[in-house]
Image (tube, rainbow, N blue to C red; front, top):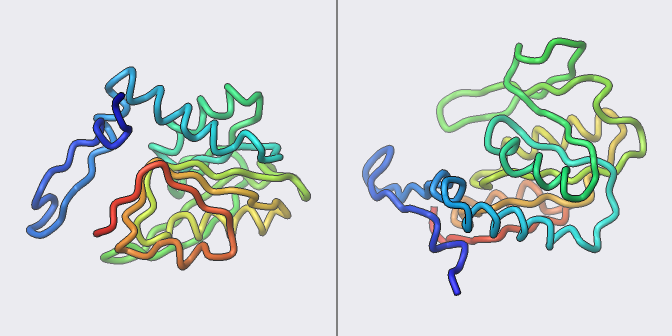
Amino acid sequence: MADLKDYVTTIPDFPKPGIMFRDVTTIISDPDGLHMAIDGIVDTLKDCEFDLVLGSESRGFIFGTPVAYLMNKGFVLVRKKGKLPRETISEDYDLEYGSATLEMHADAIKPGQKVVIVDDLIATGGTTEAIVKMVEKLGGEVVKICFVMELAGLEGRKKLSNYDVESLITYEGA
């Protein structure tokens, strides 16, 4: 039987020498890989009580929306600055070379709602940390964070140590 890792293509020395790039698009493009990823995330949530699934642009949309659909939950979008049409809240976060801003609609989460965050990858954890801050700003509670892949060597879990974090695939390096 295939393992989800079998659907990940690794590209050495991309985007620069020494980096082993883990390409999630090869999971998405294969029907079996996509089923395994979505079913795997749903399985990690089977005993979790929550109201909403939240995913960030863009691969969080790909994995989070079918999870929300299958579990009969609403889905909340987190987007890059300036992409949402109504009143938003925002959070800045650091990138390897600079910073960026994420936004979500100010009315997307109501106080007391329990939220699950779904994304394709955890590396340094900065993006997810910014998302958690926005959820909590709106009075929501992050009850679980699910990733398809984790680059454990970049220690992103440290930024999320107060939360229940689960990854379907873990790579020990960066």
